Each structure stands twice: as structure tokens, then as C-alpha cells.
Length: 190
Picture 1: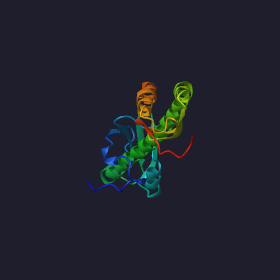
Picture 2: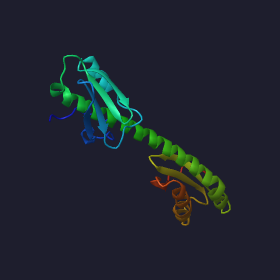
Picture 3: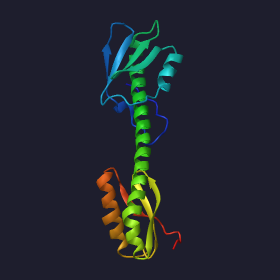
Picture 4: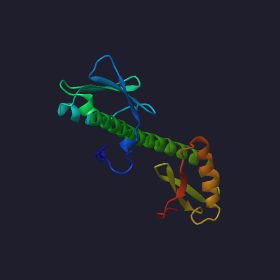
């Protein structure tokens, strides 16, 4: 088996060779249903199928319930073109899964931001303010929440307990995908 072309997107894109697919015959000799281990992503990397249609290898490709259906162009054979079609199915699924992963990560980061904002406002901010300080949400990225400590909280030895013991613990109870909460560099607020 020859090496597959590198996927666009570089790092973070799953290796398409790791997508397990199985071809099933249909009633039409040029049409095969490809079953995908782990199921189909909500979107596929359809560009790889368009390339095969343009090159005259495939007549069509479409996803169906639990499978991807591919039909060879007239004059093509599975013996000659099956490996290229299998590779296209694997790349399309890998690209779709990578997109889904990116979408899920963005959705999860948004949910973490909303959760951190709520917990900070309702529970942490009043506590910190009672001690002359504040803890402010700065950023949420890749499952990590960055906060900034200001006023009496900046440099306070008990701040670590407030961040990890209270904020992170409360967030993790509602968002188990949380990677962690960390203190961002102080930008001089008071």
C-alpha cells in the first residue's frame, strides 16, 4: 500500500490511515457502501470525493444512514480503483472528524466561559471583594480558563486555594472536560 497524501491542516488532523472502513457490496456492481468504524461524523471532507469525480474515477459519492456510498464511473473497476476510493473515504472521514473536534472544542470553550463567568459572579467575586480583591476571567482556550487576580488577591498566598480549591473544583463538577484554571500575568489592575 502506498503512503497517503498529507492531510491539509497539519497538526491535529487525524491520520486517515487510522480510519477503519469496510466495503459492502450492493445490488449495483459499480456501487459500494463503506461502513466506518466509530460511525460517520456529521460532516465529511467532501473535497476528496469531488477530486475523484473530476478525475473520472467516481460517478458519485454520498453519505447514507451509517455508510458512505460510492459509485465508480463507467469503465472503471474496483480492482483498479478500489484502493484510491478507500483512501478517499478514509481522508473524508478523518477530515470530518477533525472539523467536528474543532467545533466541539469551540463549543466546550464557550460553555466553560459561560460557566466561569457565572461562578465568578455568584460565588467567587463576592468572596474576593470581601477581602479587598477581585478575580476576573481573561480567556478560555482549549479547555483552560485563564483568570487575573487584582487588588488584594494579587500576590495573596490564599489565592491558589481560591482558584484551584473553589473555582476549579466547582467548574470541574459541571464541566468534566475542563483542563484547568490558571492565573494569567497581572496587567496592573487594582
